[in-house]
Length: 334
Image (cartoon, rainbow, N blue to C red; front, top):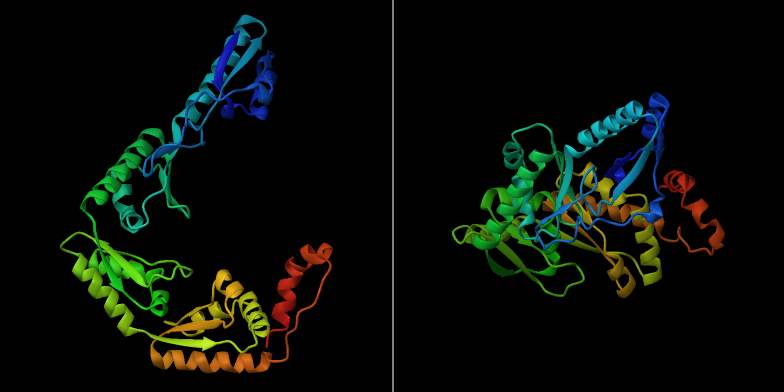
């Protein structure tokens, strides 16, 4: 008796259980002899790609052979079919490469998409690659994915953009919750160029009737925060040592926790490699920022002359990067 099933649904433990229960022989081919069935090709931007949770992403069909007395062979086939039926009732699908200016709107509509599901058997997650993943009952997943795709297409049609000049220093303000607040208040998303990009303009996306509110929200945010640029002591070799230390002990995060409303930004790896001067940007209300500046100054005063670079055999690098490294740095925190 020959039976065709999707490869990913074949579990060694399950097949052993079926063999033990029915006494039949179940033969499966080697994995290297299996070829994809062509399902799950790449799709255009903002469209669905099947994925592998009992689903269709380049899923090869596996032909197995069941040998034994006919009644027991039929019983084994029925058991395998039941397993496959349960597995194929579930699905995981993705909407990839969502345009960055549309993604904030899609994230904000998460509760709406859960209502579209009309079922609790759905899980929506966001990947760092601008990708929404939906998992759950196959029909529910299909319904939600279609709603997301249609919403993306709608925003592609109705959104316009407006550019606003803004000093590079102020770009630090527009991250995380700040962008969420602007979207909630003005119904606009804001795209900030990367730190390495010399362009100082920010781009506001929204409906024609909302763009002016978005521009006003950006200006208000920029005007309402004080930014203190704190240069690390030089020469550059010393600056890099100090930056490595305060980054390693997560000092910026500590300052943000102990001084609510203040954000501390360190230079990117590209800036560290290319610049002759390194700065820390401290952002928030001026009175609070001033207190953080004093605290940073005190720490750096203790660190001057307390750091140096040492050469260590590369064979020891992994040991140093292990848990003991964290304990060492924490115990020597000034």
